[in-house]
Amino acid sequence: MSERSLRVVGFGLIGVDKQNEPYRQVIFKEDDTSASAELLVRKKERPLLWADIEKLEKGGKLPPYRGYITKLNSMDVVVFDGESIDDAFSRQKTQLNVKSRITYEEAEVMREKSFGYKTNLTSDAGMEIAWRSIQPDSSIVKFRDYAGNGKFVWGNWYEIVNREKQQVIRNME
Image (cartoon, rainbow, N blue to C red):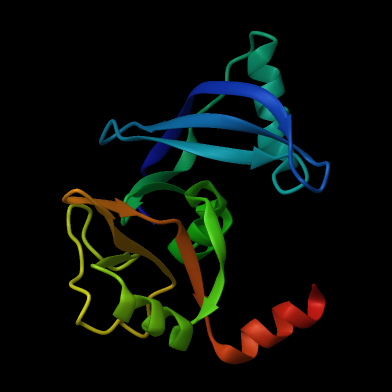
């Protein structure tokens, strides 16, 4: 990894998720590019970062973190040193409001009924045409539907999982 660094430039109040675990919003800014991104930090997942934020609340100062900010589709992703982009995205995709997990085959059926779609592989300002198949290595997708009166709306994101993983997930629930 390069020597890029991130600084905490803001943080929000503490909330509690569905599992009754505390989390908070933290805003990072990359020193080199001035890009900024939001990260939801869960106390259980990142206890050291949580402790650093508490130190900031008390007026302390923090050194920069090694890492960078990158854009995946329409989401800015904070990637810390030693973490892959896929791991960072997987951890932060809850910020996308993923509605549910679907198989690639289910996504294809939904694509055929839509008026376009976006995946994590689509460029930021782009949209895929509905008659083109979804790329098999896509991990999330959202669809565009006709709302009437010449207006189109985007739906929620869906996570695309393979059939075996989908069955394991359903068995765990």
